[in-house]
Length: 394
Image 1 (tube, rainbow, N blue to C red):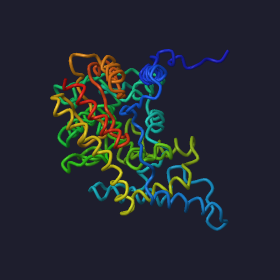
Image 2 (spheres, rainbow, N blue to C red):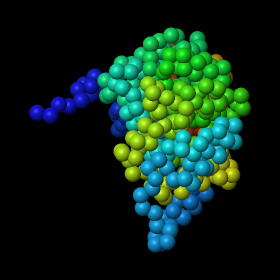
Image 3 (cartoon, helix red, strand yellow):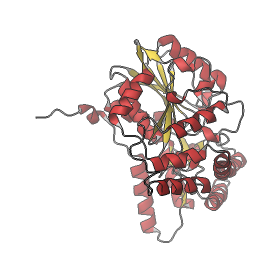
């Protein structure tokens, strides 16, 4: 009989979004016609910008003509897109070679696939509260996980604590907390990783929301990161590609472990396991990095940032502690009146039909906290903020 990967037995059932869906469905069934205000989902609400749509149409048109038709694309990414991404990094004073950039079908896919490079005997350090896939992907591989708790006392931005770990997950701006590491804080993590031969998996999916010029968008803005870090980024939140799917990964050529070069290993992995990302999608992605593309996507991002501003202003008036919002699309708040995160969820749903995300779903140290997303409809967010104030100011 075939032997299966029994590590799947060690996965904890993920009740977070299932429970949310069940509670919302039950409420709607009992209260037909009541409008719900959804500030929980991490999906974008604005459509792709015009220059991306135009480029996608161009890609489709190219596939209809013999002289411009493209079949299989280079597994590691089309040269025209890698060149555009490299130029984007240069604008932030980060010099990358084009063959250090790998185009993917999205950051979520890559965060799981990249674990192929590391032995199951390696230990993974996860800063919690955390994006649940960090934990689950390593459990599936049978990897030991070291949990590093963060809290309000350190702004949900912990420093290395000497934990014995080989892989280090850092998400900045963070999902779910919205907290952002500054350069000095990241430098300490880079020093720690280099000193022990660990590798940082840096999730930069929300970097486009950083508005403070002193905060790093990329870990490669930190000296020494090229010998200890892999950066994984996405166009999902940057440019609305949640349904279009495209991301990119940066693996420096200077990154070696055990005498093996991780860049070369990933080339072999991608050329063995993938056939590349669609030409049409890569055409659309390249438009994001043009001057007009940057202007248009930042108009959309400004809408989400204004949503966050409305929510932050409401929390400020209510005197509720929170982090995130200014440089991230998520706001992480302390549940008021001593409520647990699920109690607060139920309270908001029943009283004002507002849906957020209970912090307990992101790990044990998320209990007592709550996440609001700024990706919702602007008018709905405005009304939700007003309803939240009226409820909690009583």
